[in-house]
Each structure stands twice: as structure tokens, then as C-alpha cells.
Length: 343
Image 1 (cartoon, rainbow, N blue to C red):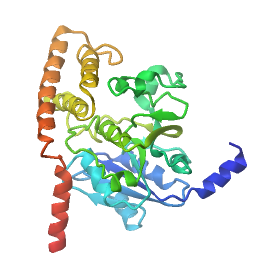
Image 2 (image 1 turned 90 degrees about the vertical axis):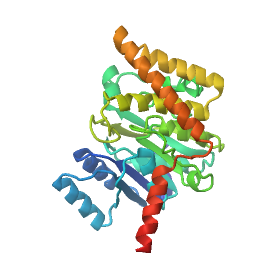
Image 3 (image 1 turned 45 degrees about the vertical axis):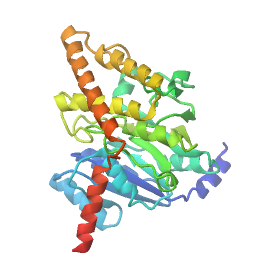
């Protein structure tokens, strides 16, 4: 596209965007993330920070208060911690035609919002945009030299796609089946017209909650479009964020497998489930590529125990799905709002 055409297109980009940043126990990275958003050269956006941190460092608290008082951000304080719950909470309070989700430990280049928004112009088939993620840890594995044009056919197969979708090194725009939760946007009507919401039964680090949402989104007929120009750097901070429990704890390990199994049971055919659960075992229990975990018999047995416990936990959650949609935090927030209104 020539410079004149690009300029004309950018002038059309007035679609209102709601940027949602859920945060939990993050300090300086959160401040940097918000600052990068506020520096974006885009004419029409709002920033909703859904804060689940009990207390901040004094300087971070002062920064958030200053931005909120100046009307630069909408700052919501919650007493509970759930990533999908925080997403749902903010969507109900967002006003934009595009809903864009970011993590609280990202750095944004100039033109980031423009890159997301232009994908929705004159392309009604696109319901979501998956942005490229320069994951600090994964880029380090390959020195940042690997480049992928077309994702392999396996990346479009829900049974095994999760081990072949590379939104770190892929450089060519294309249709995908899922996005990364730290850099994804959606048309507002995905939530309003089709009534989709994030499933709050995804626990702990909430791994696979965005995959679950994207699989359900595809049933609407909308496409998920990957745009490598809509890129950011994901810092992958080791504490805070959705790391609300230690990655070495029993609870973390069980919820990790619970979330994978639950996503499969909800969305995949029996054959796809078998392939997905088999790959989950091969990678995360046996430690084969791309996981590269220790092959120690003791560690394999330990991981196998977590795998088994996670499966039965997910099975219980899935069975309860017939009468319980799992919107625990949404209902709690609505109840609190009603109590506040009545007072």
C-alpha cells in the first residue's frame, strides 16, 4: 500500500476502541503498559483498568489515582481475582465498537491501535484480530531469527492446533483459530449480539480461557485474523499478572491441567479430545517437544498424577455445566452493584 493510500485509510480510523487491562499484583510493568497505551496516536479510545490488587506501592497508587482523576483511564477496583471474570466485568462497562484486551506487562509500539483497527475496515467477515506477540522468553529461544510465512495445516486443527500456532515468529497475515490473551481484539457485537462471554470456570492462571472463547466465536461464522503488524512485546513477568498461585504448587498444577481438559470437553469432538489429551500427556507429562521437560521417572510420575487429578476435576466442572454456566464473579459483581444502588 502506498503512502497516500495508507494516510487516507488512517484518516478513516475513528472506530471507538475500548482497551481493557486486567491486572493483579503488578506494579511498575502496569504503569509502563498504561503509559504506552496513553501515548498511542489514535483519535478515539478509552482505557479500562480492572484492578484486582489488594494494595499498591505508594507511587503506583498515586499514578493510578492521577490518571483516573484526569479522566485518562477508568479504574475499577475489585475484591476478587479472576482473569476471565475481569474481562467480563470490563466488557459490560466498555463503550467502544472494538474491544481490545492487553496484559498488564506489555510494551506497545507507535501505531499499535491503528494496526488493530484497520483490519475491521471494509472487512465484515473479521470478528476478531489476533496480534503478534514478541514474547520475551520465546524470542530468546530462537534468537529472534526464526520467521514463519504460512502456519502449518496442523495449526487449524482444534485437536492439535495448540502446539502449532506460533504467533511469535509468524510474519504473514492469515486466518487463525485462536489469539493470545495479551493481544487480541473483538467486534463489540461478539458480546452483545451473540452473547458470548469468557468462562469464569477457568481457574488460576486461566490458561486456555482465550482459546475456549475463540473456539466459540468461530461458531458465529466470524473469522479470527492474524495481523503481525498489530504487535507488542510481552514481558512475561514472573510474578503478578495471573500468577496468583505459585507455579510449583499443587493447586497450580491441577488447575493447569483442569483448564486444558475443560476446554477440550467443552469444545472438541471425542476424536479431537483424544488427540488433544494425548498431545497434552506427551508434551507436559512425558516432557517431549515442544515442552522439553525433565525425563526423570519421578517427575514424570508426579506430572502424571497432576494430569489425572486435573482430568477428573475438569470432568466434574463439565458435568456441572448442564445447570451452572460458571459466571460466579459476574453474579457477585452484579449483586454488589445492586447493593450499592440500593444504599
